[in-house]
Length: 572
Image: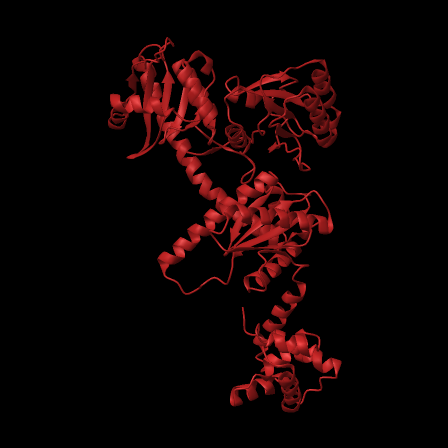
């Protein structure tokens, strides 16, 4: 049963160090409870995660070649930051931006200048263990701080543990068994681990650092029939130590139990022990496995619910109205100006398709949405993306203003299309810069208009701002008006079309070429592949047939507009 509880604060540095250290992270210098400096205090540290700890507002990767736009109270991953001078410079900059911590690769020489920078900036300095992957660390950190990002303000509990908090659950099981514990999925990937991993063996440390049981161990376990025994039994299975060889100490024994929901295997629990479990502890592990199953099912269901919720929130934010402000706040985008991106496949969607083909298209669009969301979150952790209809919308907070913001948003879209490659023919419309959340509907409208022009095939572009295709967009909208009212074509151009059809002539292409060439007969005749004299004869003939005064500027403009409009008339 899901039991609502008092809302818990977001994750702070203390919680991160308790869950991930010392296997992954060590506090090199600073206060893990989040005693912030003047810069952080000015930016607003928010509520703490216990004992005054400052909440972590997001995880960002430092890029020295791009202007960072970290969220408030960010934990910054300083990839390739080694030298003390660089660390000091970065700490001072992060202090001005209101960050709570900086992670660099261990070992870290915390000299006097570094320590002074930590005190001055209020930014804690942490060290990432050698052998640990930055990608693994970023994924774990984001999973730790994700609770409460969207959805209900208060989390829920399962068995007294916050729903989905597998790290807290692993710690609880480890306390019951008095042993370090890991929770793994069906592919033996580590989902969470308890504290006290330093009491285990080198193979456990390698498993946690790699977030995956090493292949050589899974091979030995499979040869011993351990996996088959686990799948057949609903009780813990004792696993004898695995010999390491080369003089290394053998691994500790393990106790493993499969986690099930009915007949479905969801994962497993592994404890590094020194002797078989007592009957009481074995039963406690079986009871804990049922709770782990509930958490895993809740996480799986929650992913689908969160996806639908995020789509609803993005759609509400883009539409504006009474609920827009709350939707923007729940997405973490309040008071963060930016631009809207509209992504879709080239051409119009085919409404007449089989159910199977429709299902494939839906799945493909959802995968595209996930990829787009991941790309945008790498640019800015507070970006939002969701599939609304057949269009993927992205809201990107851009640290710029006006045209500069739109150009940056266009570059972000172009980078994504380059990464996706030629597997899909995609188009992205970029809306105008929104100075606040109230401007998102207008930015969405501009992105939609630009996307429509691109999907109509106007030119080879794959990304465009509405300012780039404004005239083409107007022509499409005029075509909509014509189609809605049912206005038939009229005037000189229509008479020329009828004459061409009846007499198999080419007076309309002649007129188009002449107008496109600003009346340059030589250029125009070359475009339609006829002699200039022939072209001049056709020009005189079309003026007579159409009743068109080519010397009249208004007549020329009307003819040019009609030639641009009719191809769009009737298009949706």
